Length: 449
Image (tube, rainbow, N blue to C red; front, side, top):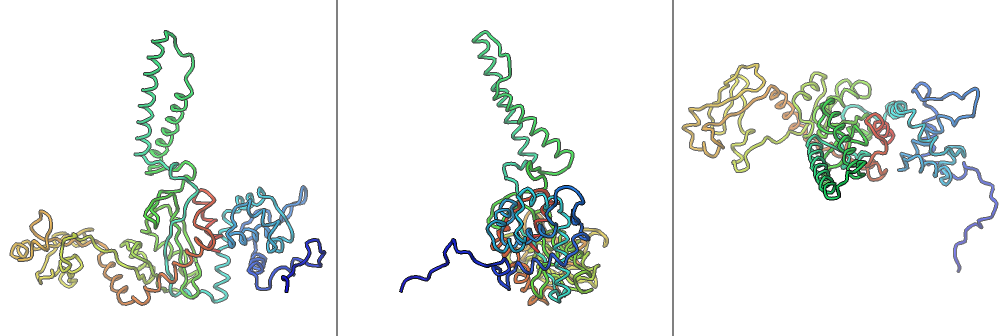
């Protein structure tokens, strides 16, 4: 029967780039999207050709190349340069243009902010196509690796330890030199290379320590100054950024994003809600978030914005050997008379002013006569105390709303988690190429676009 035979390599064919790209290829959507955007209005540089000098590559061609590259896990300028020679879709997209990697990299460097605006332009387009409903929004964060090795990150403690070690090495080295000089009855005329390197390293570390003292920060990174040491989901730590996203429930499209230097998600929920409120959502909408966002001040800000927050509560810290019936959440607050009722039915009274930030409730007499005191009270204190913070009311309100809307809360992971999975695993976006928060925001915009 033989084999299926291909075309001879030296056979001349009448083909155009158009013939080689499928009708439903994603590259056609990218091409059309960039064409309908007003790049000059978005702030892109060199949108008009120069009257004199060597002709430039057009701004829209390079913008298309970057959008296509990030969509296909090809982000470095050198790889994009190679694609222009071997990838039929890129040849079609660029009309056969083959810019070198320096030109490609320079375009991204010059258009940090405009490339971020390009993402928001696409979100507006999705809104006009009614792909965004704006009634239910899920917010979450993920750690994405920064372009900075852990060894090049220094805390005050780390710097102090290294400086101490260097001082010991210098002292030991000088002592050895003195002994050699006495033995040989001659003096060294120049500083040895090893000692010179130690002194240079000491000067470098002292500079880092001085920079920390000026900034008030706890750590400094030598390669990417904005990168921070953060825990990952594998139980380790790495240099990373905390990338926040707000995702619409209708088609799971990302509405907006932020890049945080704080490993924690605390105080991020209100920021993300403000970014999308009104512009991309209904006047009153619901936001879903996990317990990492459970913060009283933040929840209060959301309430003032008239945003319904459904947020999982953080488990209160209870002693490990304490029976569950005596846990803090088993004590009931009575708003009518401003007291607490313990699991045994005894009333606990406030012992601070009503406007105090933290108020203590207890009943020494009832605890002294209670047969369960040893189970309920741990430590040296002879009576049980319940502390009520200034945010307890908003916590209780949020907890009640979450309990009543558990079906909605269970949708949170389905809405917000898989875009991160797509970006990290399908698009190889689990690390950043660019450095500093300002530039990293552009990479996030291109990945999310």
